[in-house]
Length: 153
Image 1 (cartoon, rainbow, N blue to C red):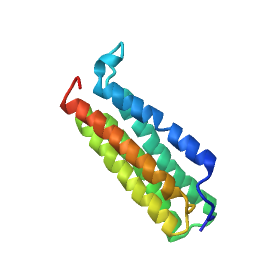
Image 2: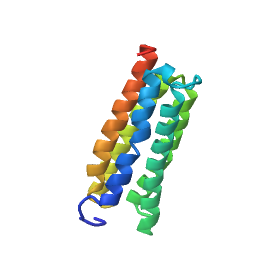
Image 3: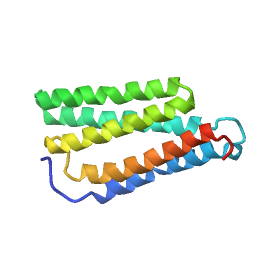
């Protein structure tokens, strides 16, 4: 394992602060009249795509940090390339389809995060942070998706 320290405080603070745009984006998607112009779903979908891509980049960085090309490192590099593709597809779709695609991407990355820890490629504390963050992101995406099904709240 990389280390067995408890969840670093700064990582938790930054991670939870990163949820603010998810929650705000869900409110905007659910209450379209909240914004002066018609951007309804764009903030939440775009932020979700950016964060999903960032999560892939974390695995790219972990693979680079290992300093050697092992089967696990190859898997991490492959995994790191998938989130940007999922995010791009989600943004190319109408919001009613884009939200579920992003949600599946977040679930895939959570699975990858847990596997990375099991293989000693990520810190043991990482799933303890990723789990709650992913849960709130998924709830926010579900609220945004519901805004496409039931426009206007």
